[in-house]
Length: 161
Image 1 (cartoon, one colour):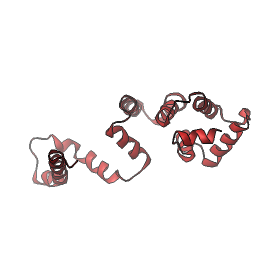
Image 2 (image 1 turned 30 degrees about the vertical axis):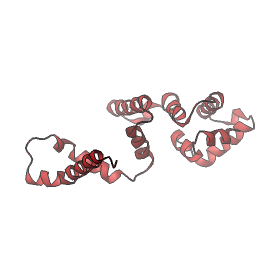
Image 3 (image 1 turned 30 degrees about the horizontal axis):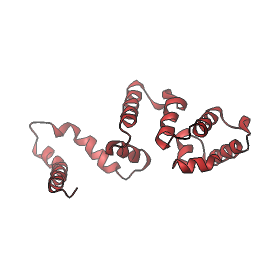
Image 4 (image 1 turned 90 degrees about the horizontal axis):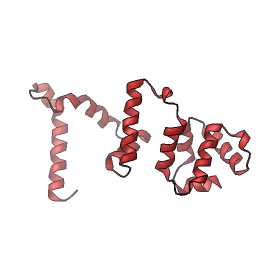
């Protein structure tokens, strides 16, 4: 059964529905149709994905997500040329470094909002980090970042990390 296969690869139905931009109840229907061999009732893109999952027993969650992004998502829906290139760069990084902390961070950021405030702050200070002459206001704004980096380096040096 397809539902069991999705559990094996740790891919939640809600998550899959989000990637394919369909509702969760519709995804459940499509899975039921697939298990009943009613392929004509399933959206063609979804059927293509289900077949990929079923036929590739060694495929894991990241392979399935990559398959969706590579084969089922119309890049025109994702934004302008620059945005599409950014998405491609991130995708390529994740494919090349699937177990890296950075890839895991990208995955968390795409699914949760727990880092949003930090991300907004980092985007705001990006240009200040390498600036040679900072105003007092800029130094003050950058202070939490420099303290945080200092603490991380100190922790790494002590081996507590």
